[in-house]
Image (tube, rainbow, N blue to C red; front, side, top):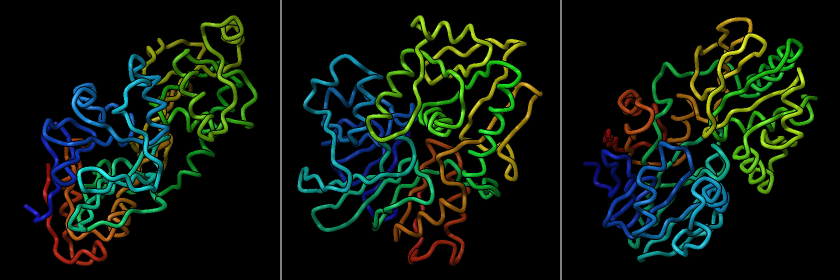
Length: 338
């Protein structure tokens, strides 16, 4: 082991000390942190809900209320913490900081009663501000392989996406498929730039309302269940968005399709063309390989656990961290892979 009380269970529960887990259920933990609402981080959420307090950002709580509905608004163990403000529990202090991933996503920093600082990155983008300072770190390994180096910026991707959508709309309707967070980022990119109706499910519309409440500038998305939404769908020029919980559309000869993916298809080009009407665009809120290493350096961590339960590149990342001078401030490499 690494000498620090950090660990990741086979089910993906991240341990920061004896009292706190993140993004997973552990019966003996005093509390859980929910870093964000992507499915691969929601393991056993309902089990945790019945046994322990769950800390999260206010934005994540608002999104979960839409997602889970039921009793979440009334539970006193679903606790929204203010970003950057330490919260005392069991003699420890937990602080949530933004991770620049999706709305509400956080880095988790725990200060134990003995002063030791432990952290979990969650999913994060780079650059990320502020970066938590820790003695030991559990880090996301989604882009942990040296093969995941981008030779383009996310600003380049946004420009290419706008150009592609504008061109395809001249041909007819565009179906846009994306996961939560990536979809809403695309809608923010379109705001004030694309002059056509955008139509989505009632669930997507509800999510957009939350994003707006937390400062996202997103133009109106019409619900497919309303008369105005149905009229827009009958129009030859519109964007039909399909989110995480939506049924995926059938291929239609008169529609173009764009899939937004967090994963790169090529390191030198974010746009993959399947045909003249079907594309995949790598619009990502994950740090790439170099960004991941820079993030680890910025935390000042002396020991790192690379999480292998999400992303699958933990071994490659662990090996790279152990190379001399690859990660600044890393005095005594201690890598565990789960």
